[in-house]
Image (cartoon, rainbow, N blue to C red; front, top):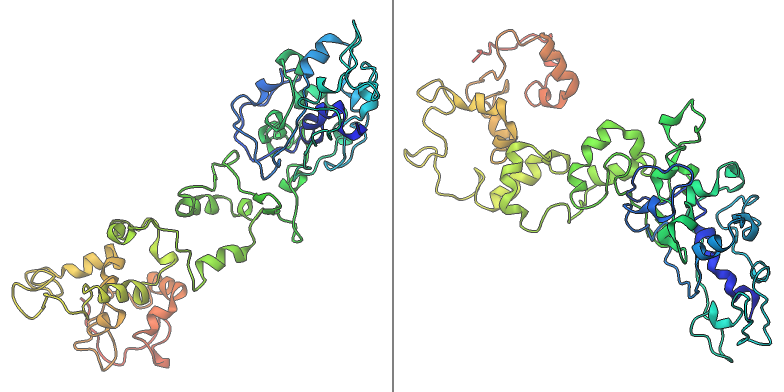
Length: 428
């Protein structure tokens, strides 16, 4: 049997990967103290991320607990003798057959050898299912998609990150026994600044970085996404509709993984993701549109998208429908809706409260038929209140959205909030 395929592989899962303390994006329980029993560290953490820790194949029979309990003086470095000076997570720290031969007098010429009173030496003791003349089943353990420096952590007890494997009764350690992210945050956290446990807190301290210095999202084993362990930002389910609050709270956090173009490609791009809304959203969108949550205007332009769709559906003012504003009993709005008569000019109040509702049927030029300083307007109704021109609100609106002002005020003399009126414009 090849030495690289010998019983030494029982250390593989714990050392090559579990030693990588810059753990996965996984849900984690409270950080342990030194000496905490092995699997108890990760009892409530859920499975490790296969994107960070690729799936393993370890056809080996081994028990960490049995070996440590049988030889209490045995130290981790007795078998993993290169762990203290390892500088990268890709280093192969699996002990070779010579480490096993310290206790197991292996004789390759006698694969079925049994020595009374001695530790097992037969090949099948560690390689279940092996038969003479057949190759030993291969152990497949891919390096983790993380960075880790064992040498920089040599002053930290092995049990702090890997737990006390003897007390926990851990048999074959696999990727299920890897430390999780919150364990790393015990030291690698902004809140630890100024303490003895302070350590670099940048995400790329442990996670791989791309050419621009951000966390690399596209990894060989899949797409890296957080599960919410830090700020409740699990990228699943409805995250597309609720990510705005997290982005507003800390845009720099999002920038750890995403460049600004990632946001603009979606928010400003011509083609929008088709899976943002549920399949029957057209039947239920009216409620959210009125409520303004989520903000429809983040993706859709009311005049070119909403009104056009409503008109094609027979809802807008330019579409064929049973409504007729000139015929009593067939008006959509009540009498006096847009004047000072019996309706009390209700449309002004409703527009100020929710302009998007009006915009779902009426195009912008519909308002300009009355509210305009131009010759095309019917009666030049002033949409502004008394004392508007030159007021702080006038100036603020002009600064924020000057295009709106230019819909009515188009001549050079009308630009700015101090323009001189070319004709008397009555105030409503």
